[in-house]
Each structure stands twice: as C-alpha cells, then as structure tokens.
Image 1: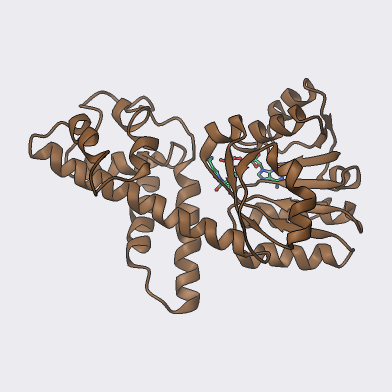
Image 2 (image 1 turned 180 degrees about the vertical axis):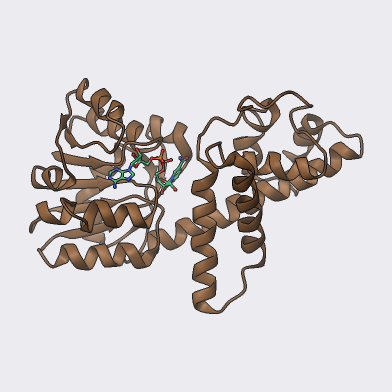
Amino acid sequence: MNVGFIGLGAMGLPMAKRVIGAGHQLRTTFHRNRAPAEELAALGARVLSTPAEVARESEAVITILPADAELKQAVLGANGVLEGFAAGKVLIEMTTATAFTVREVEAALAGVGGRVLDAPVSGGTPAAANGTLTIIVGGDADLLEQCRPLLESMGKSIPHVGAVGQGKVVKIVNQVLAATHLLAMAEALALGIKCGGDPKVIYEVLKTSSGYSKMMDLRLPGFLFNGAFQPGFKLDLMKKDLNLAVDSAQALAIPLAFGSLAAQIFAAASTAGRGGEDFSAAADFLAGLAGARLDGGRQRSAE
Ligand code: NAD
C-alpha cells in the first residue's frame, strides 16, 4: 500500500519505520529538521516537499503532529494534505488533539470525497518502536477494518470507541489520569522521603498495595530514580493535553479539580525551564517543592 507519513518526531519516526517494515511504500516530508526524513529515505521512503504531494501519492496518509495548530496547518494550510486529497483516500489522524479539530478536518476532507479515522495513540516511545501501541479509534467500523492491517504494523490493542472525535476524547481522559497519577505519586513519595523512607523500598511495597499505579513502573525506574529526564514524552506536550482537558471542562461548565491542579503544576514546571524534558520532570519539580529528591540526591542529567 502507498502510505504517506507526516510528523516524524519522537513517536512518528519509529512508527513510520514500523510501517516500512510491514512492507508498505512510504512517502513522507520534512518540517524544519530533515534528519528523520533522511533516516526513512535510507530505508526506502520517498521524501517529497509538501504534505499535499505526500497526499497526492498515497492511498492512506498518517499524521502525528504536536497538537491542533500543527494538525490544521499540515492538513488545511497552504500545500497541506487537503490539496492532494481525493475520493478513496483516507487520513489516519493520530495526534493528541481536540475532537473539535479532527471533526473540522474530517468535514474538509469529506468535501473532496476523502475519509478520516481518528486514531490517537497510547504507550509512549518504546511501544512506538516495538509496534505495541494502543491505537484508540474513532470512525466508521468498515473503514477501521479496511485500515486494520496498516494499524497493526504500529499497534497491538486497537479498540473502536465510536465516531470520529471519540478517539481524541478517550485519549484526553487517559492523559488526565496519567498526569494526576504521576503527580500524586511524586507528592506521596516526597512525604515518605521527608519522613525518612527509601523511595525504592516504598515502590516495591506499593507494587502489591492499593496505592499502586502503572505510572510507577513507567516513570520511577529509568527516569525519576535516575534523575534522567530525556524525553520520552515532553513535559510541554502533557501540559498541552491537560489544557485541552481544562478547556473541554470549561466549555461544558463542569469542574475538573485534579486535572486543573495538574495543569497548574505542569505550567509551573514548564516556566521553571523544564518543558523540553520528559513529562516525569513535573514529578521531580513537585517533589522538589517539598525539598525531596526521588533520585537520592544525584545531579539531574539535564543540568
Ligand atoms: P514531537 O514534538 O517529538 O514530534 C512532532 C513532530 O511533528 C516533529 O517532528 C515536528 O517537526 C513535526 N511537525 C510539527 N509541525 C509540523 C507541520 N506543520 N508539518 C509537518 N510536521 C510538523 O512529538 P511526539 O512526542 O512525537 O508527539 C506527537 C503526538 O503524539 C502529540 O500529539 C503527543 O501528545 C502524542 N503522543 C506522544 C507520546 C510520547 O510518548 N511522545 C505518546 C502518546 C501520544
């Protein structure tokens, strides 16, 4: 299958490699940094100069961009995907963005006969490299079945959760929980440390206790215990996801107490200069407010 791939960042590059590895003909383009596109060219991808050209030469186009603004630019902007789209083509949209924007994109592409699958992902960069992502799909069931073999080159669990937009909704719910679990874990461990506890011993006990969260396995070893904050998933991207959640709650006039607090803490950590680090740096920042270090006091690797 001829597959276009737009957005070659921490997630997109390893995902695009999986698509090539599954035997598809990949077309891509570059944005500012040429290096990821050249890496794919060495594996047989064709590098074209605009998203419109990528769309023109592809049956399915995959996008995984930072957020709504970049998604709109790459699809609806000048030389965007829309200009190269036509009936029979499908956009598989994997950005963590708002339901509103993916529906706007769907309406525009439907105007030229194209179709859209809303397919944000969960699992992080290791799952992107191994092809074990969770791909949360909103869209027509028949289109999902048509695209399933391509999605299976990148993901293992591929739930269908409703119409276009519902994938984004489920993803944002996950992000609110991931961020609040991370921060609650940091605050509680900081208390334990200040009371003289050893965070590694506490973690071992929590693994089989009611306070356990998967976030502990994902971000204590390798990140917080090592004082290592190379992304991973950038702090500013999680800040963006929390702000999407807060905006949605405001639009619905409902409270989002923990999510709003998490958004404030991520904003403070970003202002403190940690936005480009892994999102677990927000936990390090919060523990630091209590004067506690989860890495036992070693220098941060990003310092
Ligand atoms: P990233 O910042 O590493 O990569 C984004 C890529 O998009 C960059 O290569 C950038 O050059 C490119 N880009 C930006 N604007 C563009 C444009 N107009 N046209 C073409 N390319 C453009 O981000 P990431 O970590 O790969 O995340 C991508 C999306 O996936 C985000 O929505 C993020 O929230 C989500 N996500 C990330 C992770 C993770 O662990 N990193 C996990 C799940 C979901």
